[in-house]
Structures are given as C-alpha cells and as structure tokens.
Amino acid sequence: MMEQVAVLGVGMHPWGKWGRNFVEYGVAAARDALNDAGIDWNDVGFVAGADTMRNGYPGYVAGATFAQALGWTGIPVTSAYGACASGAMALEAARQRILSGMCDVALVVGADTTPKGFLKPNSGERKDDPDWLRFHVLGASNPTYFAMYARRRMDLYGATQDDFAAVKIKNARHGLNNPNARYRKEVTAADVEKSPLVASPLRLLDICATSDGGAAIVLTSMDYARKHLRGDPSVRVAAISTVTPTFPNTIIEMPEFATDSAAGIPAPDRTFKQAIGDAAYEQAGIGPEDVGVAEVYDLSTALELDWYEDLGFCGPGEAEKLLRDDVTTLGGRLPVNPSGGLACFGEAVPAQAIAQVCEIAWQLQGRAEGRQALDDAGEPPKVGITANQGLFGHGSSVLLTR
Image 1 (cartoon, rainbow, N blue to C red):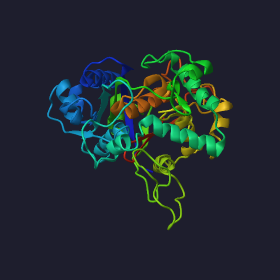
Image 2 (image 1 turned 90 degrees about the vertical axis):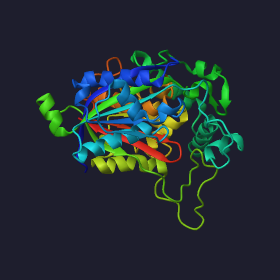
Image 3 (image 1 turned 45 degrees about the horizontal axis):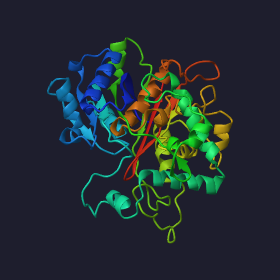
Image 4 (image 1 turned 120 degrees about the vertical axis):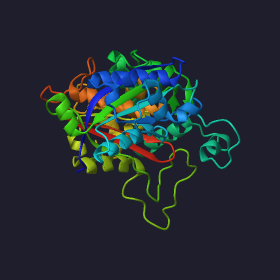
C-alpha cells in the first residue's frame, strides 16, 4: 500500500459554453481550491497543469500558464497531457512530488474551452496520426466508437435502449441540484427517444456534449495537513492509476482500427479498462466491495454500464440489473455519478478527471448538498473511486478515502 497524501481543498468553475479563455476558468477553480484549503498561493510549492490542446500555445504549457496568471513565485511547474486522463496524470505528478519530499503543497489545475459539436482531431493532413486516420479513412467519429461499445453490450448481454435511457434519466436527476453542472433538467425516456439518432443505437441524449469548465485540487503531505488543520485531514488520496493496455488488447479502443491478435497467445485475464480499476484497488489495498460512491466516465450512457463491470461492482453482464435495482442511484448502495456525470457536465477534457475527484471529495466530506450519497448508517461514504480513459491508452482512476 502506498503512502497517502491529503486533499486539502477542491474548487471548480461551473461547466457551460462560456466561450472565454480557458485560463479564466482554471484560475477561478484554483482560487476556489486555495480558499477551500485555507492556503495562500505563496505557500504552494508545485503546480501541475493538465493541458488543453485547442487553445493555441498557452494550452500546451498549462502549468506555467496558470502559475503566471496566479502570479510568478518561482516555484516548479509541470504540464501533463493524456487526453481525457490529463487531470489524473497531473494529480499523479503532484502526488509524486509530495511523496518524494520535494514539496509539501501542490496545486493541480485543468481547464478547457471546447469547440462546438463533437471533439475531433486537429485540422491538416497527418496520415501517420491514427486519430486523424480514423476520422478521414474510416469516418469513425467518437460517437461511432460509443455506438460500437453499446452494440457490444446489446449483443453480449441483452442490454436495451431503455437501459441506456435509464442511465441518462438517473444522471440528469442527480445533477439537478449541482451548481457546477451545465445541464440541470429532468429527462424522460420520451425525451431520449425523441432526440436525433446520432450513431445507432445511440441518440443525442445518450452522448455527452462538449463544454467549457475548470477544476482544481490542493494536495499536501500528511504532516503538512495535520499541522495546518491541527488534526487529521478528512480526505486522502489512497491510489492513482495511470496504466496502459497490455498485449494482446482484444477490445478495440479509440483510435485503434483493430484489436491485437490473440491467435498465437491467450487473451488476457482482464481488459484494459478492468486493469485501470484493479491497479487502483491494489495500490490502496482495498477492493470494490469497499467503495461507497463512484464517478465514472459516461461519454455515452452505455459506457457507464461498462464501468460498473470494469470496476468490479458486478460481474460481466450484470450492470443492467444493478441499474434497474437502483443500486447506482442516489439512495442506493453505490451511487454512480452523483454529480450528474458527463451527462450533466459535458466534456472539458483536461478538467474532467480533476472534477471527478472534486466530486468524490465533496461526497466523502458530506458537502455534496442536494446530491449527497449516504451509507446504511446515514453517513457519507468512506471510499470513493473515479474512472476515466484517455485517447491512445491512458488509464485513469483515483481512489479517495476518509
């Protein structure tokens, strides 16, 4: 089991389609997190920025960009890019900096300003870029991949479009009272059914939007937290998983065109997405049975169901029953996406893995007003996990405990 670090403060800029510079969202979230921690910017010893790739040069050096906007203090910075897993990579950089003894206080920031419509590769002829090729040669946009995963669930496990709609209905209800969510409106099965078909079987309301937004976290060493708080910190980072796939990778992941062949060697014991959660559990020394709340990456409604199984909440093909039994709904044994998830937030790529951790921290601290998960004793959960996946094989999972 790895040594832990403390989550001393979290902050967020509300998600939406604001159309402003991403730095503004990141700085607002950072100041929010510093205020939450009760720490002055001058006490921060390291900044880890999660990169955005759609805002020109500053977005590629997010750590220094945020440090400059907050005011140069001469501290070290880093910038991390792992697509949707960027936030987890930035968190891991900050955690390692603290655990190595090189600093006591680290600020992690991610923010984005996204284009209209679905995400796609940058323009230009880049025939050696697999992400460019999948759009221009195969015409396989992100929703196409989401639809392939949905069809897989339908073929293997008998999932239905009603099951997918039920995920949207649940998450929309969860997000109603979340002040940081972009979409705060009840959704019915009829609403999902009426929305345009994007990539069969998925309709527009099955797929998350793109959004602007920002999130930030203040991590500290345990010793610093105890001195600062004059007691034990309430929330700790017990594990961060940033694994990559192993060979053979027998399920097609974006932006790949085909699976690795398993003709010559056996298929692996676990898939890439299963390995993401397993690594977090192993690092923390706890299991899925200990988890009381989760934030998972619902790029589509069907993908949320996959995560139930990949994180070990149930066996293969049992996710739909978990959903139908309201286990994953607020009030159930293991609420999933109590924030409303990407269904209510949309994608703000470098911020979303950090935002997931913010939500879990609020949940464990009992501060998720209007959407609080509670255990059988009526107390906030003791363990929460996030799950995310970045393009080109970036795993992402963070496990918090209190």
